[in-house]
Length: 85
Image (tube, rainbow, N blue to C red; front, side, top):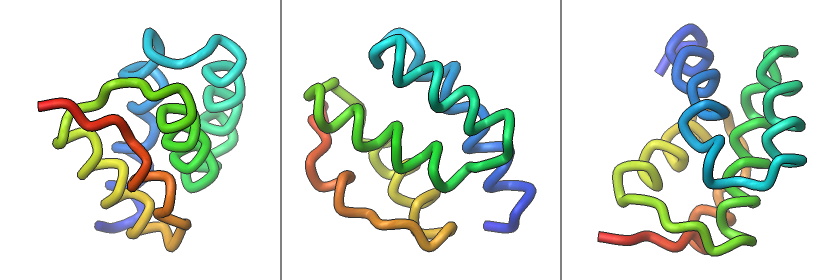
């Protein structure tokens, strides 16, 4: 995954998960997206989803994991996600 693909995929995350995360987290990750801080955005989103036991699909989990790995970010929060179906 190259930098353009990482940016494209990570920048779609705030909108995709907007209705499943707290408003404050949404504000934070939107600021990160605007600043091009895709690694921090992805780890913050993943940690929030895990902390709030938000249901995610296996495909969403896999996408978050792939993004974190591509950016060299910690992947530990992925293991705590509430994967449904």
